Length: 540
Image (cartoon, rainbow, N blue to C red):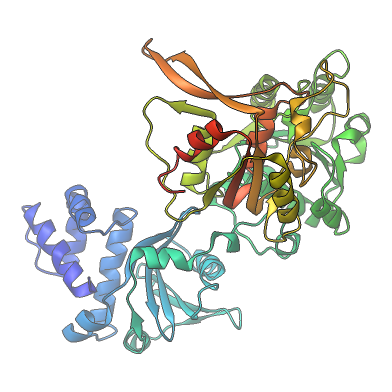
């Protein structure tokens, strides 16, 4: 809908919900506060969703500006302001744009700002450029703040901001060769792998700051780096897909840049990306160096323990005890990141992660990352269902075929395929870690799988665009009864595994959650498993 028609709709709705006389745009602005709730409901019915009352008022003020100051005629407003997307959100990462319109010669992005500063306007346009610069046509980046009388444009080529004269808005709108697309077509313009940056798998982008954090992540960075509460211990908890690794390594980078002595203890062997980071001012060590680091805390200003759920507390090793003691009697500050579900050894206990997090909450400050912007909703739902299927469940939407299932009725053919795909640079084959120690049984069922790909311990903390995971006779579904919160029994099909030194179910979860975009499951000599997993998807 064009701006003129939309404002007329708003005006009519406001008049229908107030006793006040609303004859002008100024009176409309004053009446919106009183009538916002019913107005918001009516706007949503026709597909327009503003973030809040302030944003809607800012839009009305901008409309007033283009009439009175920019001198748009009625025909100009009807013809040249149509086909904008209001509040468009990039799927999966939830990045929102206030106004966005596509064109054959250029796109237009307009951000509506109230109660802001010029610096905030500029920062937002720079962020928007990061997300929109992948489009095939260039974008004009505009921020309008009628409250500040600030109308600016970001010129990415020169990394500069310019003020927009009133008469330039009509030129901007009228000279665009507008293109109309369906929402599905627009969604297809945005390739998620352009935006998700891993400090391990996209080292160059990470070092060049070619990424953005969510507002919540930025708040955490400020709390830790600026440390206004003068805390000495911080805990960061997050499930896969919440951007925990990027946040932790971003914090480390900021601390290094201001001259702090920082060491990162990684909860596994170092990967190739971490070795590159170590050649660029970072100091990252394997968890094997934990004891040495803890015994020499005076050498560091900040000690970061990444994947700390892998710390052990048993007869052989008291890593958690050593850590908690040093937290309270050391001059070094500690940043502890953890995910209780990512445990890969019988000597690792997910309960320890909860106890550690709660302890940090008592003596320091804790943060919980909850927004899963790095995994699409269908992938998350599929992974959840794969492990525990209720009697009645909706099929996972898979129209984009991001999840595929292959079946091999003999192991020789499967091994040949997986060996071949292991050489494909576009895919990562993720396998399971086999124990080098002798398990109680002479032969482990897991040994039947070939030695292709990376094992679960090698990919801790990493992410890959396209992932292949084998599943075979080590897996089967069994019916189990659980009691719901009302005390009623519920039957589920639960994915069970054979025995292995490293828990196979945990390794499967670890491998699955490394996926950014596409997942392929290769099922070997297990037809019932193949049929059951296929049944979880609406399209295979």
